[in-house]
Length: 301
Length: 117
Image 1 (cartoon, each protein chain N blue to C red):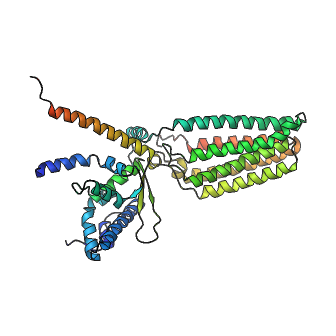
Image 2 (image 1 turned 120 degrees about the horizontal axis):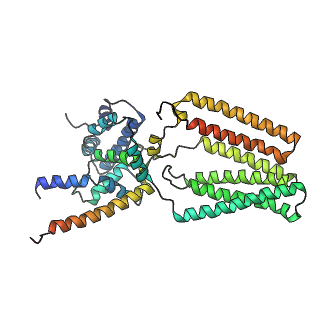
Image 3 (image 1 turned 135 degrees about the vertical axis):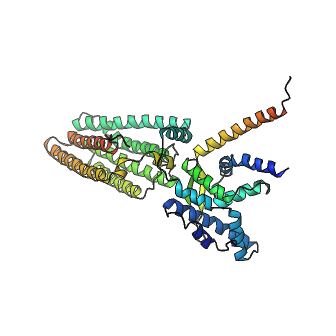
């Protein structure tokens, strides 16, 4: 067989025998890009186009074996021993500085949130000193900044299971977290006796946060590393019926939660009605845990 | 050097392809042909890893999470798939280099050992 002198025809021929999957298509495009880079280099050095293509293909070596091996290695066997090996291989130790930083920031945040809750409860009873009520909005902003730092820092970091998020995206998530935390804090300040502007600003920030999280969420690509994806095939992706059922449960839980919230707000006021939303959140996560990681009676994962 | 010993040397080298590729990615992200060229130029042409072999290596490294692959956004010409070393990849690279240095020392010592019978 003469050496082929057209890289596209050569690739089509080499990949003709194997089923077209995302992986094989990916490999084909990758080889095409590299061959074109080599051809361009040779042509820039004065080689004729056909000769350049033939030389590039010659240098590539035998890809048939590689292509054929791709068609075969889709066997779904992943024994436990390889899982252990993979975990050990992929383990990334978080840097000490990062851990210390996160622990300190989290403690500060916990202190801030405690201050917010105390400030709003004491303020609502009318027994708060004036300076405490005045301090609550500032504490809310501080809590927002702390949560933003923790969130952004964590997302921009490569872990054993996930690739790092690009800095600008992590910043976006950080800002959304800031808006959410500060918004909730302002609402708490309003409950504690700060004038109406706090409620308006709080709701505005919370809404902005929600919009930002949704926008970031729907445009987010999967950062999970391939070795994790391979090991954890979650139930919802395998069992669409369970996923649909979970969707309906979610709607029911939140309708009940918000309904109860409205009812309690009228009957006993805002001081206690938020517990309905907390309860809904708890039920939601319990249902999620039960359904996503269901124990399969057949023993198959 | 006889042809036979050359074949043996390239077998020995092939066992380190993963580490060699990780090494080329230490400082910068590169696409496949660039990695190939870096390795070719580094040896001054003495040794050539087959490009086809490299594709299998890339796939394995990505699967093991040692490198992260992404498509570049070239506007002209073919698209290129870039590889970037991960922290896990750096750790494996450092470990493999240390292992190789230790092994090399031992083998050198053993090859020179005369014994005292």
